[in-house]
Amino acid sequence: MSKKTIGLSDELHAYVVAHSAAPDPLVAELIEETQTKLPDVAQLQIAPEQAPFMTLMTQMIGVHKAVEIGTFTGLSALAIARGLAPGGTLVCCDISEEYTNIAQRYWARAGLADRIDLRIGPALETLRAMPTDPHVDLAFIDADKTGYPDYWAEIVPRMRAGGVILIDNVLRGGRIVLPPANADDATMAEFNDIVTADKRVTSMIVPIADGVTLARKN
Image (tube, rainbow, N blue to C red):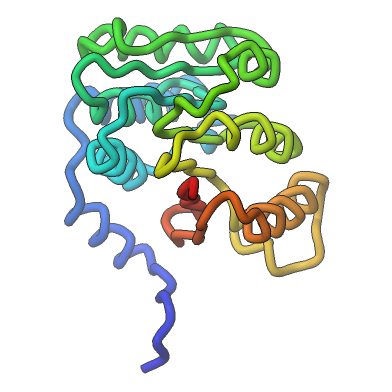
């Protein structure tokens, strides 16, 4: 048997999900509402197995200060907020009031609204307005792909030593090893090289969902 990460059939993917922390009724409802009300963009939501992964990662790091770039209907923020240390806060950056209105309803129902600071506007402006000292424990980047290099440039200096950055969609549905089909694919290929070469972090790609880069600030 080749010692490499195996591809997941539909059956094996279902097995992985079934043997991870199960979505509670609130999460299941959020996923269903997103798929029903926003079918054309529902793929922007993180995969079901990513949510417990992100909660567990947040808990393991002991996160007090977290930043999310790209919130959509709020599942990833919900996952992070659930793992925050007591008194911890999450800043969410997004440009859509329509999508984040859904998110805010679920955050309130989960009793997490007081932990989440939603900031509507261009994420770069929000990041640049933050303190420049290394104070962030966890960051999650899942927004417009062509903006990833700029988000990276702003967030890395603000990460404390040992802080972790999670970056979504780095495998582009498997197209990352093919000639780029669009600007998003081209940018992601360049961005992955930028992260790998960045001596400020130690990184690897975790083949979960559409690929998540895990980068730890040195």
